[in-house]
Image (cartoon, rainbow, N blue to C red; front, side, top):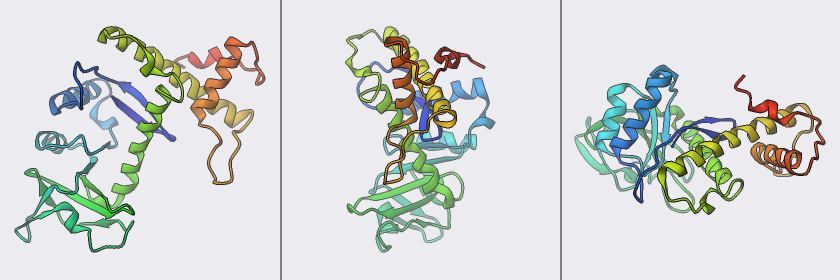
Length: 246
């Protein structure tokens, strides 16, 4: 799934259902990006963020050759070639002498999987490492990569915290695709209602830890559900207006 990160959540743009278990391969990922570029143009891509499952020489080469900015997490044991020192080291070795949660940016280009990139990283409290490779200089890598978490919020909304997509008994990929498309429309609908009511009618309560008591998606979904199923419209708005493409 390819999504656009915005305001704490990732809005699904396009997806491919794969007749297999596990992650997509490089060919499948490239096809998805090419579909996006054909529709919206490469200039509309600010950057691509992805987790450790989405790595590999061919994938990185494709992004480098296209000039697409990316911030991708890699595993700690990846081998990093440092050209100016003519050394091959383990990725975590570059960051193991720094304080925990202290991000370091390596100031020279390195090579990973035979592809040139920048690298940055830090040691986490649990002993693991957050190590990122990037197309451009890595000063913003941590901030940009943090947006990847927004896709997890989207999956949560589509599944256990919203539409319970995994409860479907459908097995035909074509039917699952149609269902996912409808749920995606409903997801955006609920989010738009949540934004409007929060901004113009009744803001969501902010808890002592500084975060909202519920997400904008959940807020909007509850309002739509009460309006459609219980006839309760406390906000006195036409929720159907938010389905308009305009």
